[in-house]
Amino acid sequence: MWYKNGGITKKQTAVLAVAVGVCIANIYYSLPILSAIAKDLGLRESQAGNLPVLSQLGYGLGLLLITPLGDKIERKKLIVILQILLIAVLIAITFIRSLPGLYVSGFLIGLLAVATQVLVPTAAVMAGEKKGNVVGIVYTGLLVGILGARVFSGYIAEWFSWRYIYGISACMMVVTTGAVALVLPKVEPEYHGNYKDLLASSFLQFKRFALLRRLSFLAAFSFGTFCSFWTTLTFHLSLPPFNYHSDTIGLFGFLGIAGVLVSPVFGRWADKYNPARNQLFTVGFIIVSVLLIQLFPYSLIAFIITTVLLDVGQQSTQITSLAQIYTLDETAYSRINTMFMTITFIGGAFGTWVGVKSWMLGGWNLVGWQMLLWACIVMAIAVWGYGASVKK
Image (cartoon, rainbow, N blue to C red; front, side, top):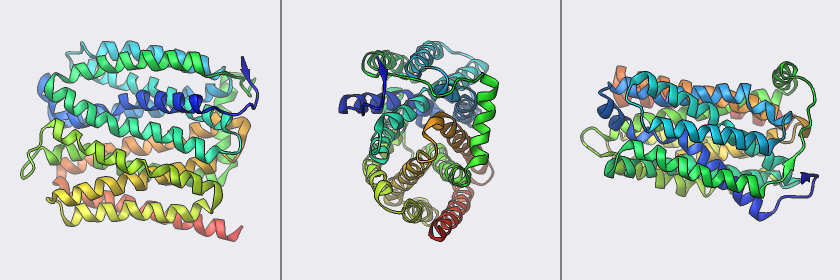
């Protein structure tokens, strides 16, 4: 049955939220277990640290080349195909024994996990006037997947092996793929041109909307800060005075999940109030969180507070941005989302790379200064956006 503005049910919203969470988690399973992967394959920390970089780069490339197809190909069909291919790669990585194989698998996981960014615009199309609320719920599922991945992978790696993580994930993907196929309606595509013109049209959206450009760069630096923190946190907490194992490091994901549950509130506020003003508040969380761990780099309490504040700030900022860009042009949601999320994940990949390099060159102190610099850039863009909104 084709979907024709009939609204979205609670069951469909729940399936979308769970599906995006299970799918996106595959990119982040590696973060708390980089040391375990390095040890198992005989790699240096810097070599293992490239795995999340490649996954994020693959995700960024998939966003650019694959997700625009959500405006051209029936969305449910595209989602199911991408998830079946991802299941195959997840099975393959459980048998990887070489560095090149690890890198290729990591890249492909990121590339195919862009099914999440076909699911999110699908929720926006079906949501009608409640875009902020529905997108907030679905995006919260995505964030719980990101943060829950760290808890799950930390424990599985500690008690079994890091390879089990991806095998179990493949089984979960089979379940969610079946749920998507059964519960979601067919969403008729809005675009009928060829693929080349479709890609060109994606870049055109970036040129059309100043708001899209501003929010994309804001998201890139905020997500880059977030990724710098979570990648280097594994290395920092595994050393004295903490000396934590992967299961303990993974527990920090619980703190992030608790913080993320607050994020849908900002989605509802974005429907009611000035979202640019809301972002000044949410970005403030990011700056305070980075300052805490820079001032108290060996305090467990500081890291606990920072984990909550950083996740609340990052996810609330992102949800508010999404609620804004989904007001631009309903017929081009996938292409608008493509440009926004491509730039966001390029920022995340670059933030991960810079974070690892900062760690190798100057340890946690240099990582802290790098994150603070990026957080200040985010605040500058947020202030600029608020000024532009007041002038309207």
